[in-house]
Image (cartoon, rainbow, N blue to C red; front, side, top):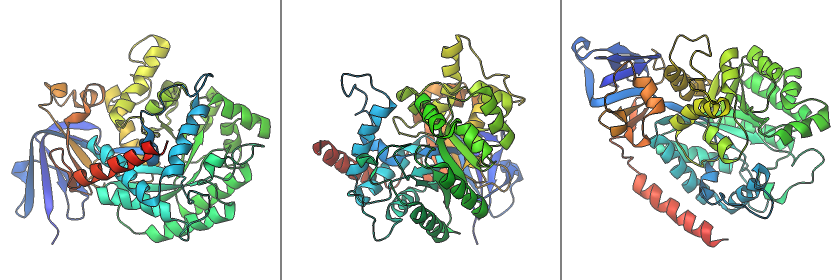
Length: 466
């Protein structure tokens, strides 16, 4: 019979509170059965001591493009005489998108997912828009590259929601872009391939599928309405980029006479299953529409800072009760707790004050508790998964941190959430479990040497291709 385990750390953070002297009880199916002390467990329960460690709910990376890890640090300089922007950065991204074979994509995704695991991520939403071969032709198996990324996540042990992305055009009245040739599908192809992918992984542990109309510039309104209806009927999460750039808003107004949020709100696309990625350049009324619909916003602070997109007004979201999740997006760096703290720190730079988010919501928790929830439970919610709280019945997805790490010395139960978010170094993460099974132990993954070696080979070939 499957074994029930008690994972017993020095400090346990569960359901929004930290406890000393209690451990996490995990049943034989890898689900949380409750909290218990070592003295209270019965015969047949395996005790797993995690001395000198704190146990924290696993983090959820709600927005990822794994292949973009390939050009990390290689697109930081100016590409020409003109100012560098998001729009010029995309040319660098297209080069990486055009380079990877299915085998390369697998190796890049594995390395990217492994890096996520090492910072406490247990679930990822992969916003996947590489569909076709390098020349733009369809593969014999249309979902080959989706399968490849899913296989990479499963090999590392990470839970994945594959957000299959629709990409039908370069933009309003724009000719097809050569750099996007691997992204494009016909609308009917996309719907067929999405449904086939969802059926293939129905019931597969650790894998789910969602719908992701890329953006209003890439998916015309009538098609976005169609995709949203399918997602609603199939109970899939629906994710889309929105209002990342001021230019994007202007183009939408030129085409439809409304901003992207106004447009999707008026056409029934906002719902509790909808996640808006970025959502930086919104009016107060637009934020109110998102709040009324119960939708989530996924902020990607590192990418938004890297690309010069702008500062996400998290204080407005806090005040209106909009759930905020986090994503690593372009993989410029992978550290979800760094992203959590930047939600607050960006506002401090904007307003030249401290503690902007503290007390900005109706929550009774500290800003550390709230930001930890943003990095964990809110991301799980955005991906349609039960987790991120370590509540009874949740998947036992968690990570541990070394309380003797120099960045955490002196932490106690009361300050655990705040110190994890605002002070902890990424190297303090020691163990990671998905569904109650450790995939990282004392900082080591069983396959990390092979993953590193194969990724280095892809990098060398990518550099030599310039």
